[in-house]
Length: 177
Image (tube, rainbow, N blue to C red; front, side, top):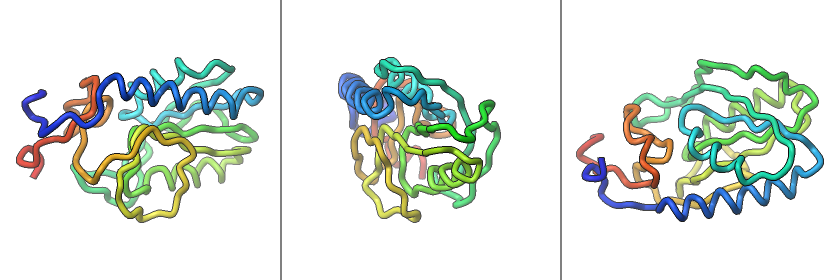
């Protein structure tokens, strides 16, 4: 798999440092609130797992499986394949995702959870792609910013491959064009 990468962009150690920093920020902000941490599957899996290990306060976890992508292109519409098990009405919610680029998925999920009566909805991403967003959305917790390149690893995939890499790399263009 490593031969499919043009370069490693973010090392495993750098990712762990991001998780520790973000975990401490969330811990400080939510020390008395018992938020629901909602992971957006499948890309959030490794990030959310490492992130919540670094939040030393009461939290609950839940997951949504939703997508706005067809291959490498955002479709602009969200499909929810698995919804939440918890009722978010009156609850503080933190949505965790692997990456934000167009902003379509996070924008729509934030809107859905607010309409369901969440007390507050904040967002947390490991990666923020350095692109002009289609949707005006403030991300509350960002691990790091990445250039506008096709990244894989640590939950990020191309056709379901590469999610298991312990770091983030740039996929060679000839593999997805």
